[in-house]
Image (cartoon, rainbow, N blue to C red; front, side, top):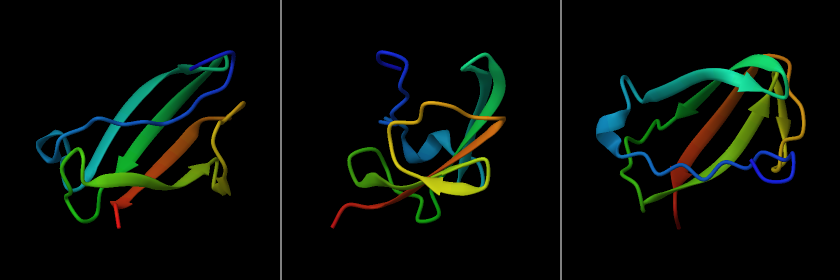
Length: 79
């Protein structure tokens, strides 16, 4: 979070994921929000990038400035 804008820069290891997912529930923008990181290729930190952010069911660009309860962050390999 920087100046009221949220950007995703995960530093998760492949062992941090359970069934290719890692999640946290916290307050963002005064709303209880669950952020779910999807790592379908079970990549380790340094080998993935954020390929897509889905905010409340709609694909969005970073930085995120509002949410209503669910953010999904899709990780894919760095090419």
